[in-house]
Length: 229
Image (cartoon, helix red, strand yellow):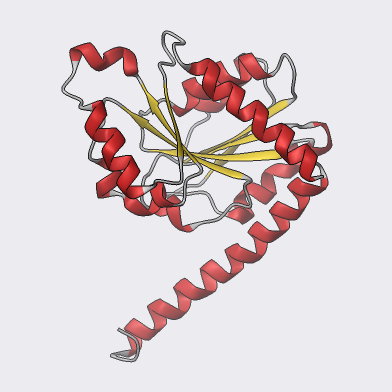
């Protein structure tokens, strides 16, 4: 509560300064993406939902027609980046250390390794976390949240901020539905309550079932961006 004590006021001030600084960097990123007509997609999820696998599968489909690049955020290691690199896609690793999210300034630093003028779609694979990344705008054109059937249908209700700001929700691992206790009807209801504005796709990265609709949506978003000029 503001003014109750010096420590409370200090925490509020620091938080405001951090977010203000991020807003400025995000605005710069957004202008740069627009200048080069880059469809920047911020991909968020909890750990293990299948972000990296989704990016490998998606890039394999899209790179036939568009130039795809990926910026991978993780606390440590380059495991995910290496998997994407093996798929033949330009990738840069962003190690956040102890930070549980990417911020706009971190994304800016990756531009020295990504040729934006030669990129049609830039996927930003955020750190696996459903809390911290929700606060930080990266300057993206579209925000996508990935949810897997292995996590539980209540996630949209437990972590509403990250879902409420999403343009698109993807439900992965539908191939597991016959074998697990996941109520997909209830999940759809929870998503409708939490983020009625978001388009939803259901697919399996393992079998490929449903991925075509997701990729078609991305292609459409890229064309919309080009039309906006």
